[in-house]
Image 1 (cartoon, rainbow, N blue to C red):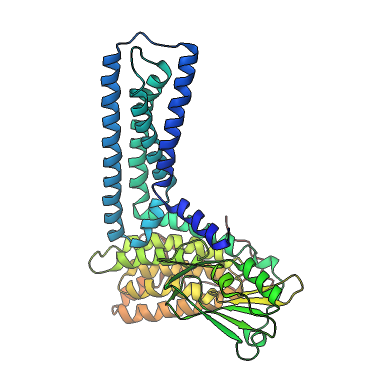
Image 2: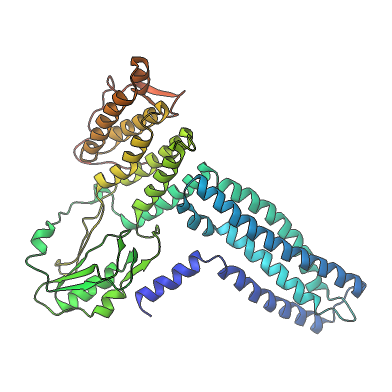
Length: 443
């Protein structure tokens, strides 16, 4: 099985909503057969009327089926409403929720188990299958109430933003495993590695978004062929058919095109697996939707900035890859595009600052975030933040004409309005961090 086949299979199982419930049906049939076999072997029966028991189990099975249909329909409607209020990008995150998947799996299991147990009631009532069916329905009722509470929490702005931030932190740690204090290497400029014209250009076959890349597999191919492979698009980029996907440099052999295609996953929409910027994209979209004139909810934008600051603090203390991978002998074998620190800052700040330009609440919260990051991050990361702080000052002067409003916008406030952080940033001593980059982010 190739890397791409394994990736597609694992991704489908992870994101599919029906896989676990279908597995629950199979487990229910096996469980009924096992328990009924034990009952027959032991000769167990209970002194209950078979017709009354069949009526009860039939009612429970009908109720469980109704519950499954209701939960599925309500979940779809709720997600659609939440995506319209927040952002459509959260739909995939909600359907990956473990509580939702496991709850539906339990409901389907109990429904299938109850039907199978109903068919085994003849002259007597088997105790194990009967009791499991009855008490399983009671457990399902409790799980249903927990599911309602969980979905309501997850689809609130704080829940959706917290989920995006948690997943974003996980992908940051996966993509950027090294801290700044642990990195001491240097990378040559790409122009020194890609000397001359490419020997071959491999076009993309099917349009879509680049979701993930098998870096180890590409490096291994490049080492065997004694060449340098350049992945043209960045993870998260949309690539049309016939656009360049790979470029091959060097005097060695050409890697097989089929093997190159098997090392890149292209799909319909971005995912978080190898794309940390997508987490910021989700949170910025939620903030932008809240700042639109149709909704006019700057407090949602402030909640988004809370999580953006949390992710930037974590990201700022890590070494961001240069997009170069070497083999065991130290030769560069793979080049690919990656976002740098300024790209992440522009993504996290620019649109929120522009859309929230007329909101004092957003201006004060953005100022508090930038000042906090300037104080705790190394000086190499703080320069871009100072530029954003200067842009925020100029935006405030442009949007707030009254001197009193400008004075309010010049104050850092972690709550936006009503929770002043400290002093006016013009009077605050924002000192650069030590030059040894000995920064350890908060956990």
